Amino acid sequence: MESLFKLKADLPVLVIGAAGIDIIGLVKGELQARTSSPATIRTSYGGVARNVAENLARLGQPVNLVSVVGQDHNGDQLLEYARQAGVNVDSVLSSADFPTGTYLAVVNSDGEMQYGFDDMRAVSALTPEYINTIEYRFSQASLVFVDANLPKDTLRRVMSIARRKQLPVVADPTSQALAEKLRRYIPRLLMVVPNYREAEILCDRHISPTSRREALAAAKCLVAQGVEIAIIGLAAFGVCYATSQTSGHVPALRTAVVDPTGAGDALTATVLFGLLNDIPIDDAVRLGVTAASLTLRHRGSVVPDLSLENLYDQLVM
Image 1 (tube, helix red, strand yellow):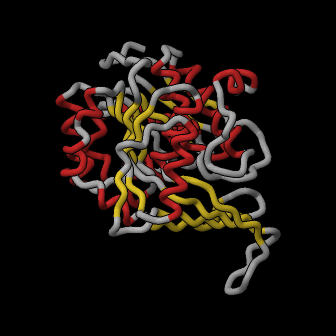
Image 2 (cartoon, rainbow, N blue to C red):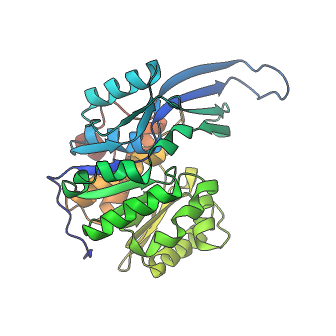
């Protein structure tokens, strides 16, 4: 695929967005309303941007993370873990005004999320003024990844700097509630990675998670709006993707779901890694779906031994 941008794998990916703590309740048996339900509860490090950054680092891609944590134990531990994973966290802001972000999910016995709650107030500390102080990071980057947790003014500033420096931008809508923020930027994106519910917001159309036809039409709709690559997640039914030259569907790998958090972030990071290393988009998406499947089998938002070799060993065909 001939891109408008020249990607340089030797330069770091600049990842901007949320970092926090995931608290996941894995319910045993049927979820009971208005009473206590037996569950296994675990915590791990999360946040869309942080997850993408760690996945990239574990694949061997240099990465700079721009995010914010609180001046608390969770923030200290998150930063240390990210450093050990190979992520450069020198541009992560430490805020005295907010606690480190937290995401709480309730997951049923089939591995499906029933409820999700997030407290990402800390991201409001990522102001346009702070982005100005780390503008030099853009000059060092191969591309920019943003998640829609960013405040609108901050997202606007990031997009402005990236445009001026002719850097490609990849965006994750993050949730239905936040997807609207990205609509105005679709024509300026290298890639967008919504799930089917977020794609409904971006395309103003209904998408059934079981309909490849509807998801492919939505991906092509996004490409018609100007994005170079659109990848739409369909949960258990895999992903549909489109560019101006190709489109397709990759089914999900059948697997027992241990933990659903982070699977989409693994897909995004792996496709990015593929693009940076001249892997054709069809193959990069297959590698991404494989990474998502591995993440679903793992307790935590990122697979610690993620590698290109492991992905090829279990490649979804």
